[in-house]
Length: 107
Image (cartoon, rainbow, N blue to C red; front, side, top):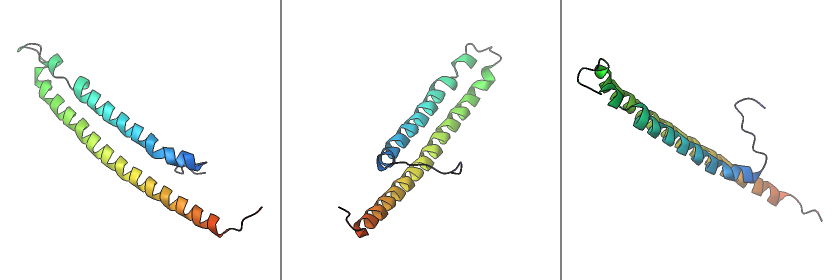
């Protein structure tokens, strides 16, 4: 099996894959929201008008925008991937059912 392959040993694993992917999307959302709230705080750079770090404070808004864009792009790409996996899973199940229907019944 190549590193890019996904091994799905059973249909129940494939059925749970979308749920697992949804959890990962939630984690990305949580990470980027955390970063925007706590990493990009301007407060530490603006404690007083004479703070030498004060000019850096507006840059944190740009960093926060970057995290927002990361979330938007990442979740969009992830949604496309989830849709593709769901479509492929449906196609595999349909092929499996067609094949099973053509096989003779063995008693």
